[in-house]
Figure (cartoon, helix red, strand yellow):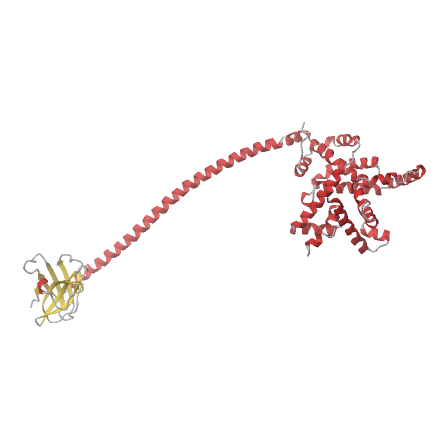
Length: 266
Length: 180
């Protein structure tokens, strides 16, 4: 509907002056809740009507007021009235207490918040630390399990009669070094135990050689394994030896760097 | 003691509902003159208007609980009580009789129109008086005498639709006069 047209229709004046019928009153009250401009128009007309009436006030006969006060004498409540007249003061006092109480509550609440926040921070940090510790323990556990399994497997191989043990002591001037090969002649599987081989520099690496028909055959690089290291399969070896080679290994052994060597028994 | 104190409408209503004599006295001092003017516009007799004013303030005092500020200003509410009480008065038998007597006496003393003229110089009637005759009559019948549009249509022998339209136009013009 066109609100402006409705406002201009005279219905506002009719309503304020008490001339609108039941239906019109209900409609205007409903519409003025939905449209603030209708409410504003009602108020504006009410105000101008009031100002006009005030400006055109007559003087009532003095008897009217005295008669009224006498007539209503028993309906006034003087005690409560006094109390209520002073209400603004007591109201302020009450408000002041409320305000004070609010401030105290706010401070207490803020302090509690800080306290709980700190507690939360502490608990949160402890939780994080525990989480890290748990992860690291899990990793350690896993490593130990792997190591344990490797050692167990190594023990199985070392005690297996199918494997021939080839002990490789250090050559002259390298006597402190020792390594052992476990070799299954039938399956050709070769395992190495580095009993005493010092850590190499980062650009060098130990390489295992098998001597087959008098010639050295690459049997694999030795690289940081727990216990027994699985090497390349070798058949018909008469001896095993380890040289120190450049990292990644060499096709032929650098005999200048021979570390340990041992002949296959039998 | 606190004669000079000014109350807002909501304070007034609240304290009236608390039955405060002081606030009732304040309400009377502030609004009785404006209400008397509208009562006088309707009953056209100063003595009678003062009687109605007293009756109106008793009604305001006893009905203030039913005032709903969401539906309009306190003054508008009081104004409507004053108008309704005044219309009830002019419709009463005693008023009808006194009017007949007055007409007789006015005819006898050739003072007809004096009172009427005076009434038209007061309050809302003064404004309505500025309207064109056809509008003035409608507002007089509907607002000051309280006839329904249906009654007016029959009384003046004009269609209801025309009464409605003319009355609305009259009210719009009246607003134009009231609003500065």
